[in-house]
Image (cartoon, rainbow, N blue to C red; front, side):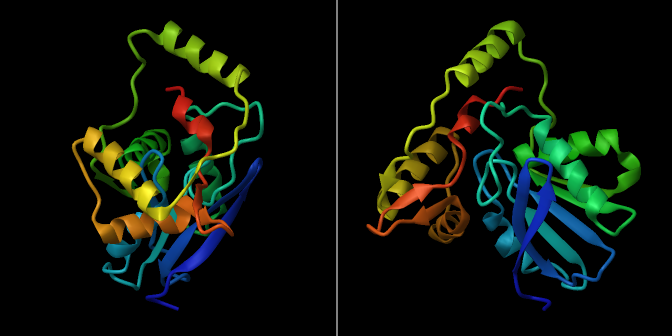
Length: 215
């Protein structure tokens, strides 16, 4: 099974966290990989396929991202939900320590978990991560806005787009961040980011409430 990606799922109190694993599933040298905000674990595939396959690598879709379940109605996305989910998963693994690889938001999550449970972490590897979030200057205003957006939230049907339009929107968003994705990376992102409908268009999987994450 080494060298092949496998679908994995971990049961949490509110649903399931899904992802991909590769390498030796019997290895005690486990690497848990967490992606960035509104991304998914698919973009770890090129990296993990090139690492030593005697280890076990688990790349996860964060709560509300990719193919992982969303939070229940009425719940609000806050930063702590991510390290909390990671705690559930680490406790379910049959290992004394894990290695963590975190990109962007996933790096902040990995960093907070490591600060809370250093005895559970062998190595912490951060990729393009700004670190753990700090309290905002206008904490009251930001929190009030997040609360009201949650109370007034109404689920709407997600826009349907062609693949070309989805990629165009993705390019615009990445340009605003001063970054970009290769065509190969876009295809990897799409595998878990959207589902193809009968009309040939795509609908995003991620929870729209992620736009109002409170930190």
